[in-house]
Image (cartoon, rainbow, N blue to C red):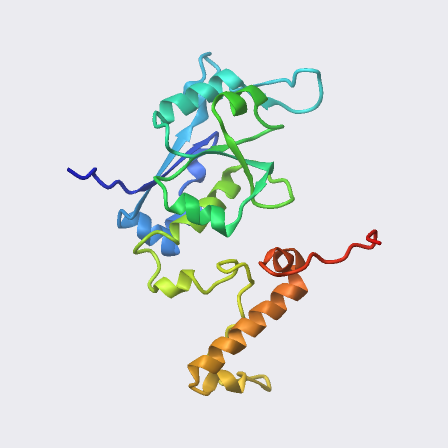
Length: 244
């Protein structure tokens, strides 16, 4: 007998569960959430505190500014929220590995992640190691907490779930899907402030349109993201000023 199919689920551990669903409650993600295509669970880390003040943090060992989320409280919150061994456990962190479209696709194809949203100066390193948290970054900058980063990750995953986007091609012809930035898009009016739509897009020749879009995507990627271009198969690494 086949196992029962379960909807994709995002479990978020946060000190501010009232921030959810937030933007995830509208547009594509919101419609999919309302129709049951995915499930969102926002859990308060403070529910696992053991003192009457519901304390979750303490001063950094070795001194320094700010506060650090306690290992024992966060570990208890993780254990209560997730008894599964096959769900990814993520920690939104500026020191994590950069989130990529390929990693998003992997997460969207699974059961859904448990996501820890840090605050203050971070969380105790011991709980990262003991609960095998995968640190994930959405960019080289620092936010007030992991909640907005978690929403970004969840939104990127949800739009790839079956039934969320109207056309399958919407998810296969966009930026990063083939290691390239997306080609320019145009629509009506045919002329805007003296600038017409490129004639080739109105030609009806699908082969020529596809070739134009490929060339534009490659040109944009070379100009704006040389790192992505260099990572494509067959491309040479850009020469460094220190190379001989």
